[in-house]
Length: 252
Length: 388
Image 1: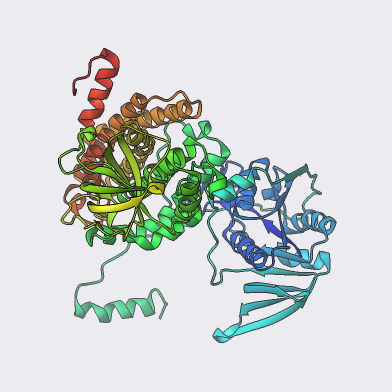
Image 2: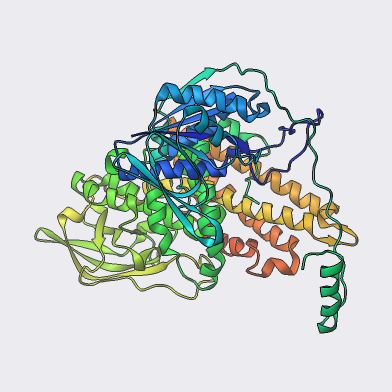
């Protein structure tokens, strides 16, 4: 089975975020970059399928700036077989239509049985690309799967549904599944994996993106948190605290 | 907040992509698996043995030995960086990896028979088997050539008698590399745990390296076959060759401990206010931080160059002495100063600097004391040995 995993390079979740002078993008000068955490779960899901069935080929696909080679090399060290890098320094400005269009074209050329995406990218937090991809590819889709197994020409996805229940879905192939955090933590790259990654191919090509129909018009940082206040001390303060939580903060 | 090592001179630029990946992976693993448990392991004087299979799976044991023996085949820089990142966690953990990789796997690789290599290296790389290294004796520390442990030929076998002391991993080891006097000079033997007459009682009541096992090795008429002897080395150069490997890793490791202490002191003094402003805003604190940044950067440059010399096959043991001597003293100073900067909080297990400080007291003494490395350098530049 061939699996394509879509991965994105995003600012580290503990980066100190600053807005650039244009007011519509991030100041990237002091940002550390990482693989989007949900994409890590998606890759781990693919690698577990490969662990169980060694004839599985795992291809990672990234639309992003040329520097994203680092993240792709990490995917290869973790165990992906090869990488496709659609180089586009303006990738972070694309709307989901543009992104999914470029990815769909590359995926169609690979003709995989399974496409995995993180449920959303940790930078934009939109969660649109996976769904739009499934529509463009005409693949059935389950979102936010916590677990995925493959056997006998189909995949079985487990996802959390309302009221603490779990749903089990069976999808015929080809299919697309978006992945959320499940039971399995992403593995670490082993030294052997890092050595092997050097010899694995990254197929890089420049892409020219069509014009976006949507764009971010303004970015804002959250308002500074206000200082806390001590409403009293000991048991006698409880009444006042409850009153303030109910009447002022309106949280209970 | 993820740990970020100090890199004041953009030394990352000098590392290969692969070495940076090794660093990031080891650093992440230490943050996830070591940091949450190490203070308690230290306090309770327990070696976190559950980490050994993970360390093996990551490929950190004997990382610089060839792939044909189940190792990762990495270069000297990667091996050094691994030591640095592990010691950022704890010197005891780095000691485990140094002993397993440099003092047991390396001599098996360099001095052992093909049969010894095939038997031990793949299993040790996985962490399925643990090794220890017996050179130091109760009465022979800096003067290992005076050792009294001896091996006498008895038919096809050898009979070992004597005792070793301060042996990391001793009690938990499956096999000990033991150096003993023979009629042909000092030779090395692989003695398996459970061999009659061989015992390895743990040395307790340490105030340092508490998350690491330290033991005596006692040999009372221990019979081993000739196939347990290293066929390819005789004389003191055997054990000294191992020590050069391990000391190389220690020079790197010390940087990790120093970076941990620097980072802790920086964060602490930025966060704690006295007299109405952060401690970090006071000149005395800034002088200490500036000194730390300078000394760590110098130590990093020493190690980077040392790795290049090792890669090129131009390294001399005296080069390693300079690095071990400088970097461990540097790390110990930084740990002590960090402890001071944290005030009373610095003495508690809530913070790392006192643990590092206590650990580094051992690192300062083991693998060639600071003084012995001073004399090695003195001998090298004058041509006169002060210790003979």
